[in-house]
Length: 207
Image 1 (tube, rainbow, N blue to C red):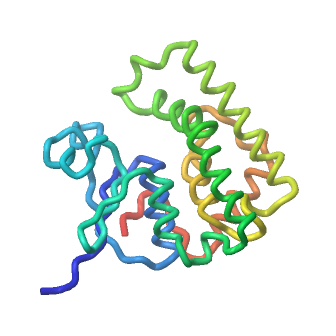
Image 2: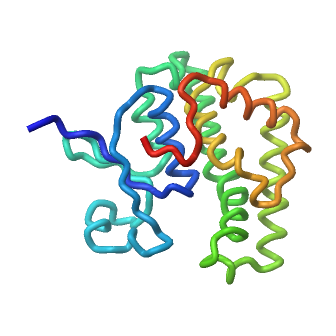
């Protein structure tokens, strides 16, 4: 019997699921992708909930059967000992800082606004107030990123790291949520740097 391969349970149109796919592509890590969509209720089916009681994706299942949820935790696990997790203590802490920023100040507004505007099942939640709030706070996050990138090529030192992978996932599609990336030239230039880094793949890539 052949060796079991790492499995990634996720959704093709989820930025959170794109993060580990992109990281594994850049590091050349082989995996099997299994589509589990919240749009169709797959994440709430008993067999999946048995794997992840939080009923969300992505979920990484290792070749020994152990499982790991939460996109940024998966990034940190996969990046351990590679070029994508800084060896320097301070730069590594900066990577963690930006991972927290992505989940608390970026994803809840930039990703959510895109979902409200593009996923039919979310249309009922797209109230004028919610759209205005996500636009305001999403632009604030982009402004913070732009200010940092005006003086630095990447988010944790001068090399690509998990912080860039995490922030790239939803930033590169932000215009689908009504954000104007041309207002943030340093962010736009950084997106191109991430895309020219070796091993880059588009969001639709499934391994």
